[in-house]
Image 1 (tube, rainbow, N blue to C red):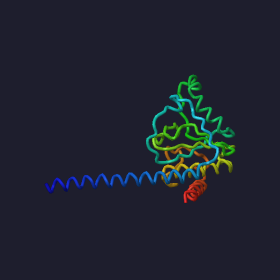
Image 2 (cartoon, rainbow, N blue to C red):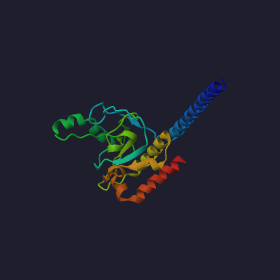
Image 3 (tube, helix red, strand yellow):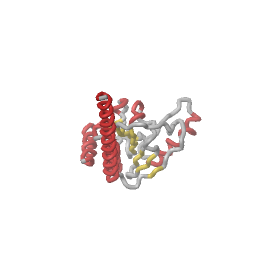
Image 4 (spheres, helix red, strand yellow):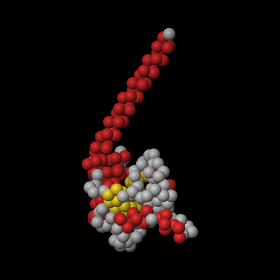
Length: 208
């Protein structure tokens, strides 16, 4: 009888503490969402790609462990043009033997405009093995050097900080495409490690 009461008590306590833990997690998530909202860049345009196998497969993104920064490698083009390229891949691929699979959650334009191409609960085809657990940001650039305009850079810092707050991680979770596959992307941040570290420091400052 005493054993039964003890077991019952342990079960009750386990449920009680689990309930407290779940409430605490919910509270922290709500606080993170509120803090993230304050960092949300103004004027993000939602212009989701049409569902298709080459750029928006609709596969669920069940967990997020990082943000991956890219550059378009297409000097002088804007956010809308790169978004439309992703959207038109089904038609483009009709003429190609080797099909292209590509997209990104966000594209930041030369003037700092931001287009969201993929919902945050779906994967994008941007970061190879890390597609399954990251949010991707493509950045437009004027020249072959890949250096971002001031407007692009400012939007990138703010958007990255927002995503870090939203998913409750730090600048340590922000990586380059290069860090996944050693592809020279984003070019300027790969060839100028000091600029990459300065960028991450600015994101960290936003988070504090």
